[in-house]
Length: 167
Image (cartoon, rainbow, N blue to C red; front, top):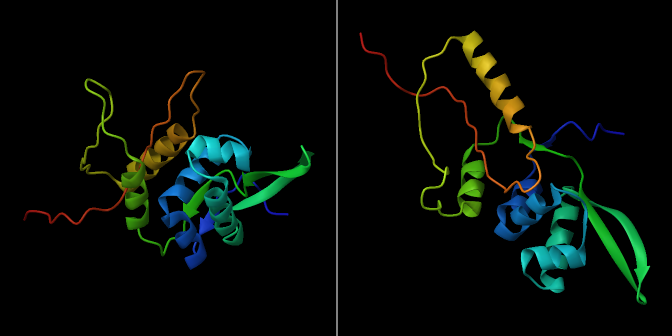
């Protein structure tokens, strides 16, 4: 059995198609918190059971979520779904464009006076400093919030920039 703590590497067209739809992307984010039933997903996402059922099927067929439990309720069967892995990561061949589009799709406007902001900064680092920074950012991104925490997106992209050097 595969280690569920290791990120699932996204590399197939089915993965990207499944996550490319805004509702499915939001569904995955809801399931990051905990497994959920169809009814819970329908309520959380403000959609219909038929729509949620369709998108759950697409995510299951892509291998991103799995059925974790079924139980009988009021003469019907209730299904509970969870992510197949706690985290996903892009195949090295996949572009960052997918992540930027996903972040833009879920980004809410900043609140007046709020801490939300998007900035582009350039750093000049040695290879050792790059590794240290990447490790620190990864550790920070895996910390969890306490009670009353609100969801925030953190799109980290540490990349070599195409900035020419002056002679």
